[in-house]
Image (cartoon, rainbow, N blue to C red):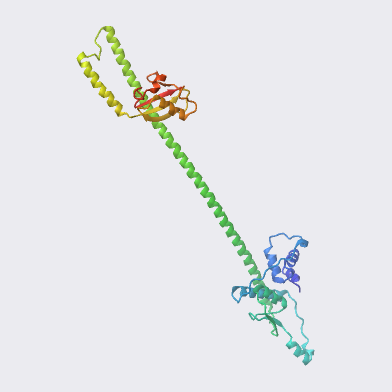
Length: 359
């Protein structure tokens, strides 16, 4: 029985059998079976375009795992041959002459590998063993391989099928393991990118919150300065109204004192003013644009001129020109002239803080 008939009797698809035999160059039953199992999930191509695929034989080994695997494959192949192979006819030894008997006894019954000592039933099995193990020394042998019983044949065939199924399952398991590993790598890289994005977003939120907090503090200080300026302005207006009333009624001024004491009062007030100037070496300014928008805040030495304030504002926005910008106060209402640009913030009464309107 040929390899094709053996494979057909095992239940394989005829087209896949032809594909396997052509692809392996009809090199034997085992290569054809390996080809069928390896390409089980692939569609059958056009057989006219199929060419023989060469398989390099493994390097020769002096025994060990590879040689043992090759021997096991040989055993399995022998089992298949035993189950589906040719059945030898009964001999007519009773009618043979003594000369014929002697010739039959001297006839080679098997092929023996001189390297490992394994015997094979025919040349095909010996060639397959040589391809698998790398052994290249064989000799004919008169040792006859004992045929397997029907039970042994069925057992061998079952073991072969189980081994093929195990190889297929191991391959599927390895592919699934590799798929899981690739998926884990992909998820880890995606997680790292997401964590980086979240960290950048968190830092941006913290930065915005800090900027808003500073802006609130600056606004609160500016409002406090405006409120203090309003109170001082109210007090000055009240004192002015009291003096004007006293003059109209011919009464002495509320702050009038003896001429002798006037000089001493002026002398005492001068050091006080000097002390106040020393208490505020810096001036905090909040500059608002007349047409609205984000206010600008800065802290300058109290000896800085109003022109330096204009230069600061011009550096912040292109809408302001140092030579044309004007500054004014809301409380008390006052507009600074161009001549005031050369005066210091202390001289203009803007210390320790003030809110300027730029136009």
